[in-house]
Image 1 (cartoon, one colour):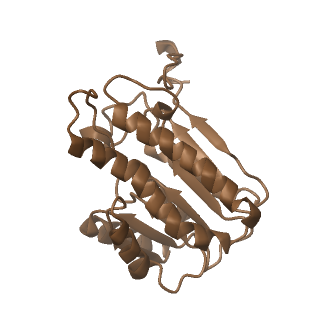
Image 2 (tube, helix red, strand yellow):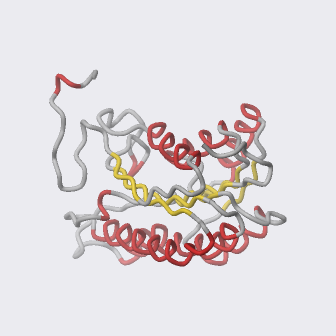
Length: 254
């Protein structure tokens, strides 16, 4: 396992106020990591920062930012990363999806999905990679999707952007290799979150946010020389991509 967490072991988490990002933030705070949290909603960021500090005593910096906008990312760097020389890790989680056929999808909806999932990842990587290089054994985690492996009807923008994101992370791996930065593509199937207007509890057969967050903290706890390149993660009661191997009903409580 890694050495004790130090004050300079800052971790950046994007999309940090809801769903997987929020769960990851709390899990990393419990493990002792000081956090830099980015999300679009400033009020919710303030609330989560106060709750983390009260519960864990962990330093938290925040920035309200739309990662799809390069200028906002640059401002978030100035607001929340000033004085931080290196990052112990980054979790690129901000994302979204709008389901529509190619023929019916509005151009602005296409741009919104690709802007957050792919452009946002690029903008975040562009500013995070120099800081990750300075911390040998740093851990970069990108939240992809089982939709990045294959295309589905109504998911053109989502599948294309997530497939591009996976490819971008592989390029980041190659460019960071000489610095000893570890890159993990985390590929979950359905997760019981607020995604696409749902509420936690709507999909009890799916992975929970906490289960995904536990995987992320496990990656951070590994020895600096160990790189888990990809994790495919699914509830046994939920399909993964096009593969419908779902456990039978009687295994629900196993």
